[in-house]
Length: 135
Length: 258
Image (cartoon, rainbow over the protein chains, first blue to last red):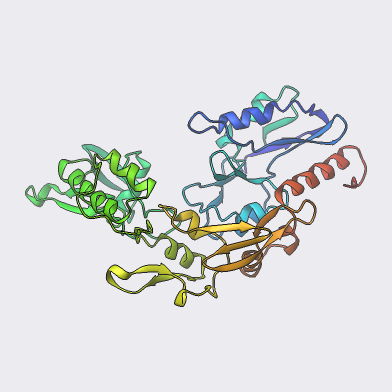
């Protein structure tokens, strides 16, 4: 893995720009879908951007019976090959952090793939709470 | 690496790869209903038919299903020649007679200029095109709960003896992969019904949201090394849990109670 996606919750102000950036970057047929990143308030005015942690020993990869989830060694992201996915939602149920999701708008399973190396949420984060850096 | 020619353009392909996967990679649109990357190619819908030839074939051509034809050095493929389009129109004509009520077939036929079928339509059609995608996906899953029964025009996809299939785990893979959406299921009051079999859905222990069926979770636990408690909560609650845990770490406390 050459890169690392980092979340710094203390800098997050909960503006939800990352959510918008994500939904619009992955839009299909000019229709924005569900976001892969969620800033969640754990107490008043304190937020944590919850996004896929790209686990080393990932439950989603292990749960997929069709080998649709694979790690991209270049970016470090676990990518979902949508052409191999049959929407059985095993990964959605298995992920211990709830970061594999079902997109109701496009009717498909979605998961953060770090936008193939140029994450839109990082570029749009105004307080630099999201960082994508070289190790 | 093999060099082949598609519609006059030279394209590189991997050894042993099927022609259809090269077409997909090159962005050339060829209709295919039974094709799915998670499955072995089946060649049952016949719509991905292409015309192939080689320089030393003296002008002879051959029509093959691209999903089952492996690439060869010097292969010349044409995907939209007049002959191929005529074959596709004939196949769609027959499919339209078999499935007169299917939106997917109607749309595809219309795109290819087949507005109305020239055959008699099948009365009380169930829209199944007999592509075997559902039985193949069940096989990949390792269950083979459903299969084709009877022969000839009576052939249907069904469970053994039409009863609730003993091997079905209620994962809905067959229903989702079906190109014409024939396989019906229902999620109601914590129960999932498919193939006349009823399954208990796992309800989230925090919010009560229904996730996958209990049998499917048991099968995953048996097949793969995943902790059992991962399946007990829904994705929304698991995200909340993560946020509270991470928030607790930020504030210096060990963990914040949810």
